[in-house]
Length: 318
Image (cartoon, rainbow, N blue to C red):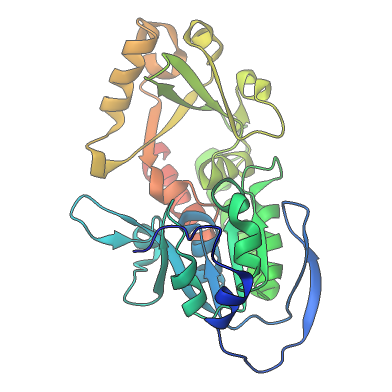
């Protein structure tokens, strides 16, 4: 895997790696980094450079995804984060465009994309190099917009808005069914989305956490007031563990990574380290209402992820 090409690589050298294709109808869009980009009306060769957002969204919608960035697991195998967990999607079905964190411009160009989707946090620095290869749009899942609004924007970029609308209608129907099944005419309980930050000894509080918080809010859960203290333009913020008493919700929702040996109990033990005594202090802890779900299943805001959350809630709360 080549590392990021240096500044000596010219625009012409990158462009030479791609062959001229059939002329496409183009249209103008404004991406999440406020770039105005001319993209194909119906892109045929999409490369995504962020697996557990743009890749899984494009794949779920049936977009013409040909390549994605990937990651290395503990056994030395490359995988698509959340694609593997939610869709059994791997690099036997699409090409690997780069290793996460190590953009490979030659490999990306060799795939001859007609649309590249980058993630703001990972690729904005290299946006001009990518744009020399193909039209490049920047996706930002943490821009303060509702997660499904961001997904709908991506659906438009990949020319699959109708499929998004179909899946969204099915999801809304299921939300109504599960709300009635779990709560009937009663109001839904309150929740907080939190994790311990053992490195800093602080409390991580999430304003949104992809599919997890989207589903909870759509079911009518009310969130703990501490979540409102996270800036509107941010996904999360760190707070002193001394404020943990403000997590006074009925439920606390966490996430874990099983491949790292994490579980509900290991995460709760980490809370013991940063906030001793919380198990006797917080209503959710005292009542056995700390719930942890698989992070790679619930972080992406896709309909498969949201249905996974609904399944977990029905199994846990009913």
